[in-house]
Length: 209
Ligand SMILES: Cc1cc2nc3c(=O)[nH]c(=O)nc-3n(C[C@H](O)[C@H](O)[C@H](O)COP(=O)(O)O)c2cc1C
Image 1 (tube, rainbow, N blue to C red):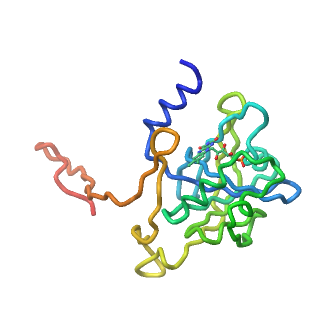
Image 2: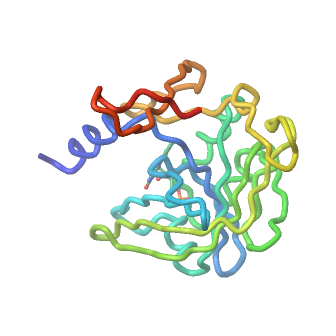
């Protein structure tokens, strides 16, 4: 199967995928932003996220080059209201172009890393690279520890000591199949986890809240 057909097939079946709107900075301090949907949370103690960065024919993606050079990145999350701006930053602009400026996005300085976060994004994670794996020719898996997590108060609810996320206020989008399909996070249902109680009647009768 040709590589592009394989990509289309896989990326259209392993979905929906959350989107990391990644801000990095070059060693010279040039800011870069781009969306990455090969992204997820891989641990919470310590908090760990990872990005899959594909090879590009002519030169590495700026995100890959900057993470390799500096070991830092900021993941911003993408609510429905910011999808156009997110999409604008996926343009394959040369390294000297700051896509946050291109998309008219204000940024806020980070606390522990050089790349800033996107002011309009309701959640931003400042990350330090812990592992950079080459999973194919020029294809990378960048694993990072979250050093600081910034949440807009409008997307949090409940006890400030143990806040929960107001999912409707957050209104995130995910990447779906093909080149242009996305989904919203609104079609919800509840499913309670079974707890094993060791009985002979199938065991799993209790439910964990
Ligand atoms: C929603 C969305 C998700 C994307 N996810 C990925 C991804 O996971 N990995 C990847 O290599 N490219 C991904 N891309 C493409 C990159 O954003 C694109 O190649 C971009 O130009 C890279 O920018 P950079 O060179 O500034 O890093 C995605 C694009 C969009 C619009």
